[in-house]
Length: 530
Ligand code: G3H
Image 1 (tube, helix red, strand yellow):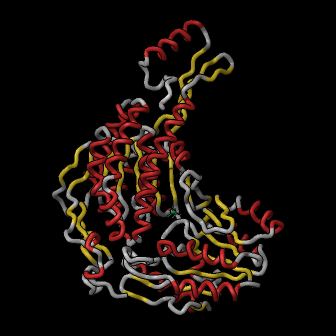
Image 2: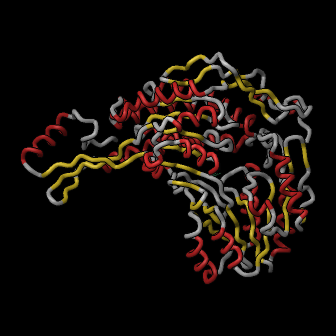
Image 3: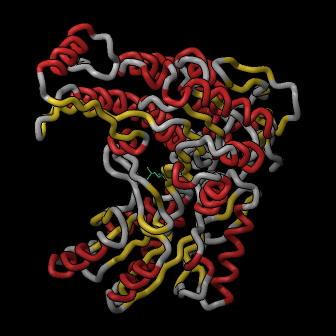
């Protein structure tokens, strides 16, 4: 594919690089004069297949990581700090201030999403808008949580005023495929519940935070949110080693999660909120509506080039319909338009990881050597930053593409004759996030659904797998997750129940009434936030 500077719309051209030379610690954008790392896009702006320099970010080390940790620890102050003891309505006001400023940065963030991770314009806009909506929904849900707690229960002569309180210091790490949405889906609920946070952006999708740093700085009390840059092993590892982190919030892969967990000296104190790898399968039954199944499998396997934890990463198709399925599916894959993120109608876009095309090629070569074929004409065609999705058939368990989470554009198809075959594979798999089930006969579907719900955490009937809508639970079994995220569940994951209890007698009741009437406590309150 040819791309040169003249084909890039004016609004999306990179006219100057961004020197991100500050980091947010202790309520200040601290100046960084040390070593920096260059940030490149794999998209060329000159038409000569060369990566584009987008800017630089600080290459921080242990001492700055400790500075951020100290700031977060001081702001939490072992639970005595201003932020964790603040009135709910005041924390909500800080969050509202933040989101209003964030909304004004849409254009810059969307442009950087396209350049840094190659996400298409509509998908980049969706990521931004979905994140803003997530923040507003979180605010509303938190208000409702607060209203639901604005009362006293009574049991066995004891009154209880039960709320949810913060856990402490959260280390927050997000993935490159949703560098805004998924990191904020951790950070925002963590903050609003009264925790303090240290946040390190993913390996790609870093500069898009530059336009938001000032909004973070000016919206929250100092030390509540700290944003640092650098490599995980250099900044995240020392923070974990300190033993002062209460929650590890990470969306990424289990290897990094386990390595970080292992650094923590007091594991029993560490809460984990993790969204990890998955290999979501589709099962296409012989009576499935093929048009529908094919369309959903195209979206499921290839949205954002398959770089989604929820992507369909393996298709099980019944042998009675496989010939027809393969023919039509392969044709549809070849009809997808490849191009730069801002091009109209583009469905496949450059891969942000320079080594990804080679890795996908390895999977293809391995599968071919073990008996699979590429069944679509364009499958495996290369450009300097892309490899066209190869549909591989027939795939078996010996192939790497069966075993590994490809997280990229390659689609393995496995034929089956008995339903037990895919079901047993899913049961034996290390992953357990979601499945897509295509079929119509309820006598077949019913027992399958009853089993599959115990193997994964979401069974998508005649539709592809996805995280949204964000109000629904997002979690997984086995190596796929720890804790549950959703607008509502995330508030629970980042908090703990804590309460005031008092025996029902005149003396205590008078004190409680005075507490309520005087509004002297931020915790003991029956006020409704409207
Ligand atoms: O990378 C995994 C994301 O949570 C997927 O979210 O299904 O909305 O693309 P999505």
